[in-house]
Length: 504
Image (cartoon, rainbow, N blue to C red):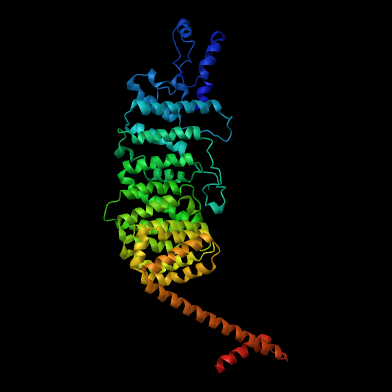
């Protein structure tokens, strides 16, 4: 379309050629209609580019309206038609892989997009069905596209980490204006959702959600704002949007393990969840259980941990009974070999426990403190240190105090092992503080746990000594016997051991 416009620009006489070149280089200026009058009239307009006949424009442009005209140069009655013509003109998409290709057409389109955005911002156009249809068509033509294969490594889950530079789309000079235009249209008070839902339908929304996988953080940020506006304005689409986001999470967790926009989608959901009414619907509880909690599984959880934690805490604060469900989910997906992720889990665990009441805490405190006990003995000092920081939280300590008869026997062995053998001084000091806290809290219980620990330690040492003596005896017997025939040495040893056990 732009090539047709440029190729059919009327040629000027040599006398006014320089003026024409100067005017055509100013792409923000409008192109005027060709005069059919006398030569004097043509000379009087030598400082502007001649307006072209509508014949040079493709069928997508409104007949009789030339899209490169300025809104200021047409009466109010024609501005809506000119707006649609400009939208249709901007449906042509250019290749930005080669920046030098179609550079003039790209600049014309950019200026036209800016003019459309200014008109929507300041002119407050009436969004009739034709205008909405043309706007959605133009946005779809420019925004909906297939992304190239993701080059990110599996370890980062397809999202840029702090060490990696973000990827920027070369077509952003056009995309940014299109996103701004779509946002201004949706936010406009004259943009009727009942009419627009015919064009911003399920297919449009699915394609919009697919764009969240863009590697350009600027694009994801624009999409986040637009989808939030759509969710607020189109109440009829709210269940579908939640379901579509759930499907993205399912595919990410259980299939691809790669997606760039999980953090942005969770940020949208954070404000959505805060608006849920009480009591929570069963659909919303299922969303927590089936979509949000499994997001703790991927390796790249660190890139969206803050947004995920905020969403989960919102559920717990709205309905206390969900605390045990969340804690159970954390234990289910607890990382065993990833210390950095384990520190993240401990941080989220503290936030959840801070919002947990006594009844829900008691449902899962046994498996929970078995896991915490394991963290206390971690050779990675940050894991052990972060676990010990739980005792700095007053609410969690109050929960422990009231359930100390269950909790202290679970963690006492870990505390004793730390005081005797942990290599990190900070962990050792924190362990001694926690140990002292329990001692002052209930001295009788503390002494009982200490006595039990000593008894169990003595039993373990006795069993170990017995096993050592038995092996020495077996080795002595095996060395004193000569191997005859095809009898294997191991057979002799196992036979001796079985015989000694039988005698006992």
